Length: 556
Image (cartoon, rainbow, N blue to C red; front, side, top):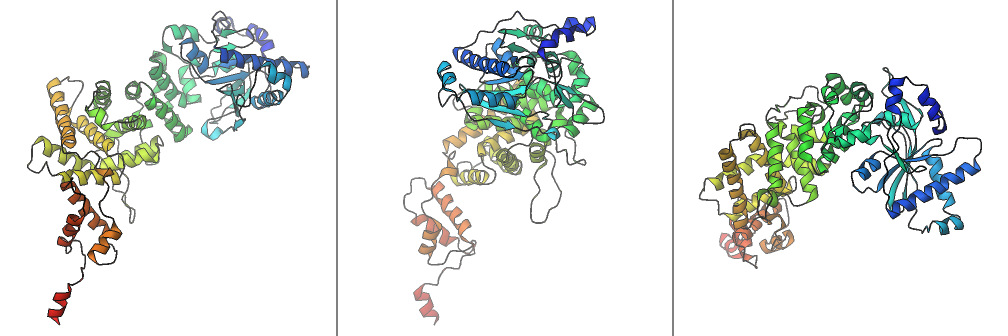
């Protein structure tokens, strides 16, 4: 990396720019941010380190520190943040961080800033990784309970024949112009105590507008991940995306660049943040309306994969959002979604519902291929294994789930058979996990199939919800919700001993017979009845029971 203009030469740099650009770029320095006492401590320490560097390293431009991006935005919105990006004008983040650690070992500095052993954490360097669009090394250190990243101001220059930019030291303006959105391009100058705005970010904050500092098309082609970052910030902040940016976010060239230029891990990080945020429905709505679905939720490695119909996808995430908003004790959402993790899983499942009609027929010896919905989550957004397992289970168990739900709605004569329902739930849990979310997936798929939010058929929607509520209420009534947690009255070793035979392949099925018997006899505390149940089904279970003594004698 080569050194470029310093902050000391910024006035000269502005003067050299065309008048129309110079007018836009002059920083606004009238906005004041009120710091908390802990932030004041951090600011004081960093300025002390900067003064020390300036005094000991003569012949160079003075160090100027700025807090950048998200922390500034959130402070202006009244949101407290413990992650602070610190931009440095004339030295690398690693160099400045090393100065902090060294000075905090000096007794005078420790006493002056009241630094304790727990106030200063270890340095962590995150290496540059151009192949994953991380173009500069970052150094992170824990300071006064803040996670502080240090990096130098930089300029990024992209060329058509390279996916990776040339990165140089830059001015604050150049650093602001390379960012994804104007609201993320604000600086808090620690030396002046004021906000600097080189891109119109303060006005866009007032107008609740997400806008790129430079031409949107070029911004997205330089780094296509910015498309998803703008979606995330717009949904998180409840801002509107600039219409000029919206026009090109779904452009075929931009989408192709997103597929080829950005790792799926980074795509997944952005989507995960969206779906774990406060407005996941809005994030999916923007992905839908901007035409991003087939680029995000897909398996990029399967060019021959089918293309799902998303014309009614809106019904899915709208329905899930309504469930969440209408949550009451015992309601569908309350019964099926118990944790923050489950809430995130539910939105991933909503995202891949359009893949549910397709059957993956690719053949691999000895192994059933994963459903297309699983591949869309696993390969498209690199979803965690746990959520992929749930999606796989939901896809494979949906026929059984629907059969039991429809039976309850139709009041079939067998719906009070606890073993039928309890053993099904145990099966779902054992093969996929989180059976409640598998049921939610079946709910979402049926909503996608039978409802249409654009028609506003409230009677049809009410009957649909009533059927699922009836099903879940019935599971509660027959007390099978905790069936996977049912403790067996007898284990395999004990069962083999009671039967007088050695353990073998028969054991798994025999123990299931015992559990089914327990579900039919919830008050039982003695497993004798379960053992007799296994004896009675010995032939079906392929168990060779010992011949009783009297029968052997008479046979002789």
